[in-house]
Length: 502
Image (cartoon, rainbow, N blue to C red; front, top):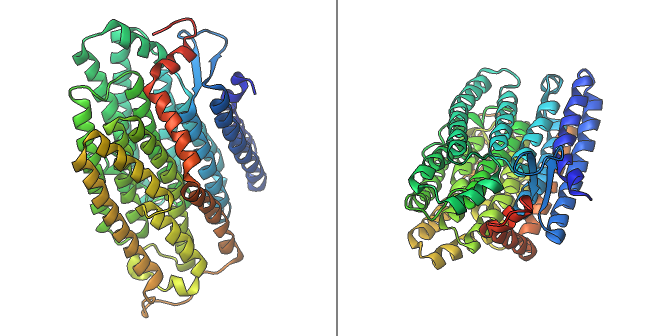
């Protein structure tokens, strides 16, 4: 497939789907049909993109025919193609879940158009070759996420949405400031040209460190890195699970993707301040997230705090910055997108049956619903990193990369955090699934045929989680290819600026 068509479809397809849903505003059934088609095509196109990138190398197109660096550039490498494919799979599962679980009022007031626009924003962030458009696409993500979290207008949702948008508005200001400083230093916005200029002009490293701090802080807020995480557990447990699963499972990881992209092209991880700072932030993010999770008694809040902890592992690979560690970080991002989304969906099924997320009000799920218990157990053990499940391979790569780089304290921290993660997953298992349901509460559960259909998206994601674990080697090899492209930035530069050489 030609690159100009392949790269534009992930942007145009969700946009056209969202516009079509707006014209069908009163007809939820037809909106469902439109979104179903968009999601299936999106998964197919993402798979084709990954295959084409692996077979033919980076795919580049210039919008409007303007050559880089003057036009708008779209670039797909192995890293961005992996992100898009994982996002599309998780998005399809969340859509299937929302079709049954989401109430009609939210569907009538724009859930489907917002959901598609959010996916368009993710595609834009992953494919853009321009630092300003990177900021613009993140604003699309922010607006859609805010609208989805607030959709329904319940008091808790509005409170969570307000916290979400306020802190992310500050982050957006920092990102825009960083863009302005970079442009003032180099007079360029195209990522490939900036990478070329940084390597050739040798601008004072202290000046370049300033926008680096702006971007690290801005994207650190969006990725919920310590100490900028406090908005996440206050926001992600408030909306319906169909919203929480996608926003929590996908959006925060996009911040990690952008940090990896920028620090491999423009900024330097191995500078005087960057690597020690990233190593420290990685360890603190792991520890604070898992300690926060251990203190919670709400299913969703435990999962929300674990997002923070898992972000620490993803940042760990960037901080160590060796090919193996970066490959481990990429693998871990893919694994966590699927597992975290699935765990949120499982919590939604439990809450739909028992009308509560509180651990103190739940119990006895294993005896009544052994299949649901099995689905949770596999995903939870994968999150904790037990072999041979997917989380184990990501943590093994990160630990091996850390040992090779001599970062023994950070590796020891990651292993201890894994143990506490297992303990907190055991806590959920004991309180929700294993212990008898409290006698003071009604024993009846909310059983409908629709409730049983919610198992399908959970099974759907579980298949990919098991594939990542049992057949990990091919995926690991692809992640190593992506890491090599990250380290050899001249490949990116040459693909975009074909008539220039670093």
